[in-house]
Image (cartoon, rainbow, N blue to C red; front, side, top):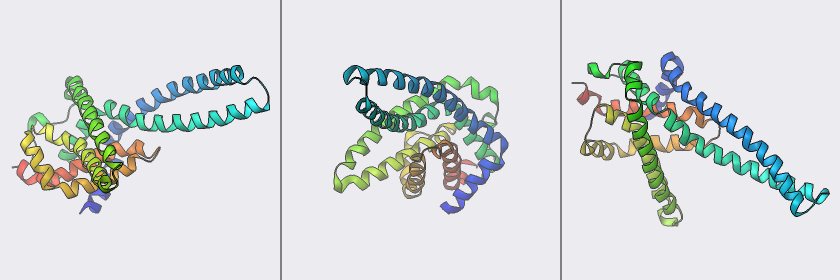
Length: 244
């Protein structure tokens, strides 16, 4: 069932032009910001780093060797920092777009028989609720960050490491399921009931996308794919009830 959903997820993102365009906008904005900032940081590291090494050690072959080693290490560290923070930044930038992508998937590509009129797609609605959605996403990112730290802490305890990994996967799934929960104004009780009833299915999907988001460059497409996948997953589990 999940493998079929994965296949459908890729098909929707590649064939639905509106969804694809809305997925690309925050990615392109994020890339532009990181290219501009990365260029300035790279130039600063190159100039100031070389001056600092020369000031401490002096000039010569030894100083150049130490500078080269430190520069390679700093470049590698910067790459991992950029890769980690990029996901966070794009997550916030894509919040209003992800909410609309989820709504479009539910309307166009799911088995739900109907949607309320106030759930119809419109760019006016997207920008009308822009700040509310972004603020909610910032809160979610903070909450996910704290719980991820908890899962990371559990990872240092050998017997609880698998629990921490699965907790992180479930939290990732919840981050994307929340678009459907909020759109249908579900209560906390309904969200928890849905989460525990489908915990294995949601966690399995979370594991896949958590691994996907850990891969540099590939993680650029992971977020919109996750929005589509978990919207389809939520509809598969709850579509008949909600669509009545």
